[in-house]
View (cartoon, one colour):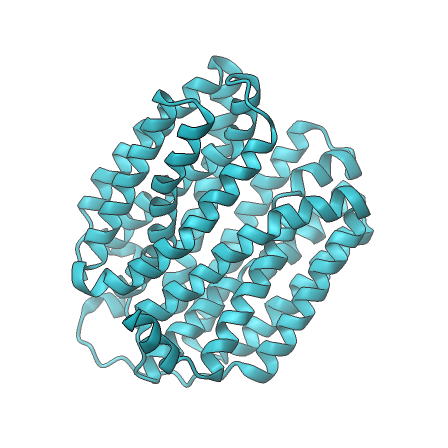
Length: 392
């Protein structure tokens, strides 16, 4: 309880605003993402191939746009103004999906707006990192608590999204998401600070070259990409697998996702508390090892109780990776918080692209069971790569 009291003393109004904005933007995103495929198939009338193509185009566009904006944000300009712009694009994107049902419009204008909107979150975390550094606060703990807000948002968001979409329609659901983004925009404008850039005095060559030229950054990116490939393959396949192969009720998928998201919150906070004692590299290795155990467990144990129990390993895996992984990128790329944070989020986007292709091909050709053998194999490779990245 001591660390909670310490954290409470450190939380001023600006810190509370950061957490509230992260939570609200997380809820708005969690309203849209889980129901997107259902929206495209039922409301737009898109065939499965075109639904998959939408995800692929959206992820690729997101990577290109976020990289361009991250480079600009690190070199010049007010990062807070960029977040305001991206949040305004999120409002426009939600309203477009609320009132438009034309596939070509959504995959062009919608994807462009979504790519700009999705950059708001990594830029928010980059601004939080810079503010914490300038105010001499505990960076790791603060970032972990902010990450916990996203997990809390994902505990609430998906059930709320399906309730709104199925009972009141997608127009209502997307309109509510737009309203939440408007409130977030107001909070950003009036509660979040503009942080002056600090010149880097370090002589380390990493600040003079592209982050991708550093082998540790490259290896961490590949490892992170594979981590999220595993996670996304599981999320895509699990609802189909438990109903078609295991004969378990469809609603169990939502229970498993909600359980994991809820357990991620203490995992993130505890990781932020203990990272100074054990270091980021050791914490990440523990997280990936938990992921390996989780995916191996899915191959062996198939009962409802076992699947629920395994979510503890899943929560440790995702909770630590989501919080500490981003900070590890930032430490490997000092002075470029925006680029480092965006590189982390782009590893997630790349993992999503790979996951869709691999899961679709395996499940259609060899069945759902083959997906989990592949996930387990990828997780082992990820563990090896993580062990080879240097500690900072």
